[in-house]
Every structure is written in C-alpha cells, then in structure tokens.
Image 1 (tube, rainbow, N blue to C red):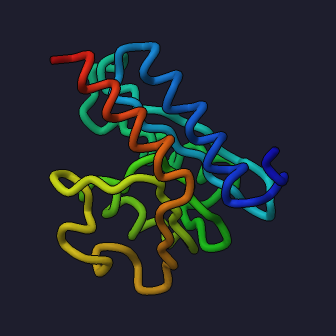
Image 2 (cartoon, rainbow, N blue to C red; image 1 turned 30 degrees about the vertical axis):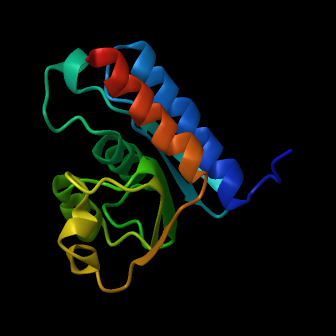
Amino acid sequence: MLTVYSDDYFMEQAIKEAKKAAMAGEIPVGAVIVCQKQIIARAHNQTQILNDVTAHAEVMAITSAASYLGGKYLKDCTLYVTPVPCVMCAGALYWSQIDRVVYGASDEKRGFMRYGKELLHPGTKLEFGIQHDACAELLTKFFENKR
C-alpha cells in the first residue's frame, strides 16, 4: 500500500493518467502537479484527440496548475510525470519555474536529459526512477502493440 503524500503515491496518480492516454490511443504519458501535498492538476497526452502537437501531459498540467493558482509560476510545486519530459516540455517547465520534477522512466531518444539538466530552471530539483518499471512498461507495451 502506498503512503499518501509520498512520491510513490503521486507517481501512481500520474500512471493512472498515462493509462487514460493509452486507452484513448495516445502515447501513455501522465502527469500530476502537487502543491502543499495536494494534487492541483492532472493531465495526460491529448495530441491526437486535440490535433495539437503541444498537447503533452506536462504542458496540459502546467496550464491547469497555473490556472488553479492564478499565476504563471509554479515555484512551490512538484511535477510527477511517467517518462522524462521532452525538450519542449522542459522549456515550459523552465518558464514555469517549477520547484521540482520527478519522473519515472528515461527516454534516451526524446527525453530532455539527452541535453542535460540545464534545460530546466536553475532552481528546479530533479529526481528520477520513482515507479520506474511501471512507467517504462506503459511505454514498452504501447509501442509493442503499435508494431
């Protein structure tokens, strides 16, 4: 059983979002943004549904969290996302000045870490590997089924 307010618990919530994306035929990426131990935004990829290449889970969650907080900066917030964000999402995270990013699985081809942590705001803390196997399995199964 997962402890409420733990990194594992919040990543499990992101995994639930990723599963929603997969069920809709989207690449299974899920994200939640947490502020003061409360989920303030949930999102999953919607690029196909919205016909919008920028409708990544992270961008959708940033927009929702900023709206909830009434401002564009997410300084006291943490993003939990199933794979490492792409370069576009890292840029959005930079501008949001989010306090912390936690991702589950790596992505050697498309993840921003290919270019280094410098793509995030200097004040952003980065952690990875939370629920790694579950996050990686979502992507592996999705792409195996596509082939």
